Length: 407
Image (cartoon, rainbow, N blue to C red; front, side, top):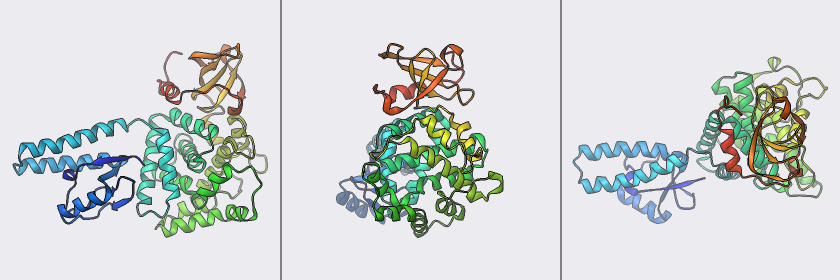
């Protein structure tokens, strides 16, 4: 969670709060819609909390509430000095809000980890909704950058594994649902929530297993076997009544091959999540095993349990490509490049060369269009085989380039 300090004068009293108020450590002081009776009560909150803070994702709501209050102050002929001081606080918040428009993937990783580890929080559902909204916004405004960041983080580190895994599965499923299957927005939201909460009951265990080299214990195996049903129990206790969401979580490990059109809405979601979950799990490094290359991981989810083409797996491949943004490939020139944008088809991405044909790192990434015969992809390269470390922010800038750019 990213906290933003707020001035006491910008918080309305005697009316429902449009956002949750927290202390400097992110502990809830007053939930959304809570009514603070007086300025003295608000001051007491601030004293106990070392100040007043809100989640950065609520800053736009706070700014709107502030503007409304400013208009009221003007209508009541408040002293100009008082109005000016309040305006300074809101201007600062507005500046922070503009900075937060850019995707900060390390911060989103922290947010997701905090949400999934604190499932009993009174504002869990609000925070989950905001995370879904952020992932949806970023995957629509820059789908290649979103995939790049999450695949890069999934393949290069084991810390916060469960949160990163959930976000990657959610984004992949969302792209397939929107761009290939043409599912409605309400169904996309159900899918996002189900993907993010599929492993809710074993977040801590997942993170520990990513670092564990030893074989599973009997207790760990039992927890894994029961985690889907346990996650449904936790969601139900949190007030979730959406049967499609709950059934998708309950059955996201169920192996049921067959056409999506023959499945119920919940089973369609479960199957798409199951295929994406398989891909993301095989991509991620573990202390106990080496990860697959992204291309090999994706091909594994293309065929179902009876070796027929899986409709959900095929939809995922169409959406994200055989060579996804954030993965590495070798070109006919013997250069090694990182994929920065999906291409016109699943095998012709736009790439940035990071290792030249002599095996040396490039000073500047050289962008290539692999649909050109001279630069076609000849092999996938596993992240573990790459000795060059890339600058994530620098590469994300390349993912935002217009699709019709001359490469």
